Image (cartoon, rainbow, N blue to C red):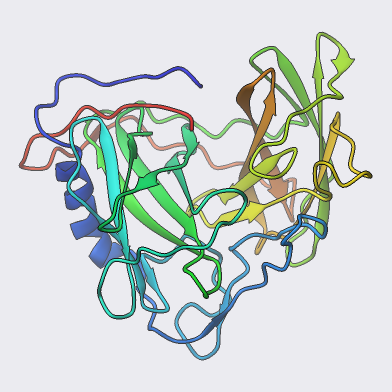
Amino acid sequence: MNTATKLSGFALGLVAVFGAAYGIGNLADPVAPAAETRHDDSDSDHGTGDTGHGDESQAGGAAAHLPGGLLVSERGYTLQPATAAAGQFAFRITGPDGAPVTRFEVAHDKRMHLIVARRDLSGFRHVHPEMTGDGTWRVASPLDGPGVWRAFADFTPEGGEPLTLGLDVTVPGELAARPLPAPATSTTVDGYTVTLTGTPEPGRTSRLTLSVSRDGRPVTDLQPYLGAYGHLVALRQGDLAYLHVHPEGTPGDGRTPAGPAITFAAEVPSAGAYRLYLDFRHGDAVHTAEFTVLAGDRTAPVPTAPAPTTAPTPDAGHGTPGHGHS
């Protein structure tokens, strides 16, 4: 998962793919009016558990009570593609005045979090682009295979409230759609075993604890990552509603142990299947553990993926998406 992977066979920059996807996204992705939005993101020190930027409400607007990541534009801020060299992913955030935003608050150690997930939830990357002076964010492309991906820009404009905008991006080629893995309480990644306890319940705050072990022994020396001992993203199957949560406690606060358990307070907006992605740092490397969980009726079957198909190829050529964890 942390190994750089590149696709070959494309001649031009990734912007052709991103641009085509954005053109479609203008039709398919909801756009909210520039109205005032209240975000509940009071967990400045991770002490209370951040239910994410997915618990947004907009009085009287189209985004009222929508989870994060479902809108390409909200409160006047818009996620827009930018010209990218081959192997890069580039975008801007434009503000209510239509100009690129260049001033952002630091949230969880970074000014911008870019999360991408393939629509069938079989791929996931969390990276941190760098911004140039004109407000363009660039990073080695995290899109590591053909398909339709959802890109989430998670940020806080200076003096504003946290916001997550989302946009579909198409990487052309033969698709091998995969069914969502069955719900499980344990998974392995890079030699680590991560065990999940707790069950999300729609409409209420639930405690989810993820415990990390290696070679049968609890890991008690987790390293801080993004200001915490763990970083959790939850995506709802179907529309990929985005929930960005953080654990209880803060590294170095004198009361939060460095593992093996990391406890999160999370609230899912509805019943259904969710994919959880836990980033944790140990051995000077970031590892990502993935789980499928069911909220609400846990006897309901998990929908399967559609039959394999081919992603559309836009008229222009395409870049060589790269792959990297930063």
